[in-house]
Amino acid sequence: MAGNAANPEPLSARAKLAVTAGKAAAAVSRAAGRGSGSVIGGRVALRLDPDLLGQLAQHLDVVLVSATNGKTTTTRLIAEALRAAGPVVSNALGANMPAGITSALAGGSESKYAVIEVDEKYLAGVARDTSPKAIALLNLSRDQLDRAAETRMLAEKWREGLNGSKAVIIANADDPLIVWAASSSPNVVWVAVGQEWKDDAWSCPACGGVLQRPGDDWFCGECGFRRPAPSWALNGDHVLDPHGSAWPIRLQLPGRANKANAATSAAVAAVFGVPPQVALERMYQVQAVAGRYDVVTFQGRELRLLLAKNPAGWLETFSLIDQPPAPVILSVNARGADGTDTSWLWDVDYGRLAGHPIMVIGDRKLDLAVRLEVAGVDFRVCETLDEAVTLAPPGQIELIANYTAFQDVRRRVGN
Image (cartoon, rainbow, N blue to C red; front, side):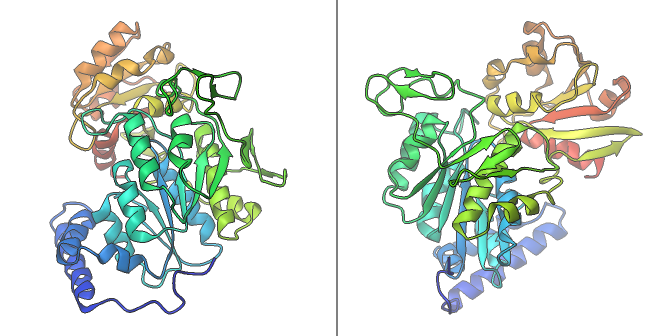
């Protein structure tokens, strides 16, 4: 597909000033040791020019990626695939609200493609501003209970916001909420990648009836809403394309969830003319995503860093870790970026950790300790990461943390 304009209009004087001011604010933030500065830079830029995001996107073929889980990794995989066809700008560090997206696009003046992760709440607005060529919708489940709308309400907002969209929607046929959200769009590519976590999708999003789930299929017996026929599918270690050809998935990222992310990414890349074989070969280059899956050495021990932010994410992560007696450190915070409500801990089957030596840290270590005790799992509460590593028995340590706890760990281990 061609860009939005072969010769894009130059930025207005106001937009140029906004970009310059945003970059200056970001530089000051970095110099003060307050992170990358992308969010504050974007806020400053948008304050000076509220229409800046649309101007920055006008010459780009834009892909938006949104979901509860997997959007950062999928964004990275799509970006890697599209680099086979031209330069790509992306918010690779996960700043996925309008300010962070604006900062990312401000650095993409020479790019052909923009691959943008978008927070679920902002998807419709960012789609309106950036006129994307493609939108990837992966899954919806409960997350940040004090901040996010109930999942059915969120799916309805997506459905309304994407109604009549000119974008190609690449959507997970196995998640009823995603199907409901995408079905208002005229051009949908359905991908069958599975749905491990089903506890947010037992009632029909169309009528509220109970969904029937025979095998891999699903349908509502009351209104007839049902799983669409997919044109792409994940089949073991292969992606099946619309012609029935099977393409091998070889990733350095672990687990079935990342194979699902790769299958969706291959379908997105195909929209832009990148063949599955080329796209999947490029995805092999991705070893870690913003620290996730990294193996680091700390206090003479190897730690594998795993991020899990909500029940669906924890369920997928449990399938990645080494078998007992591999030691496991769990860390949970409840700061603003995490959501301050920790009741979601009760939705996670921590009984799956039986047999692992478990150390618990983080701001909400006692909340997690109560949950583990009820699950009948042995554990030790530790004050610091250093103490937990010292107490861990031999073997690579699997460290699973939610969002801000994960960032705390990365700072401590120098990652």
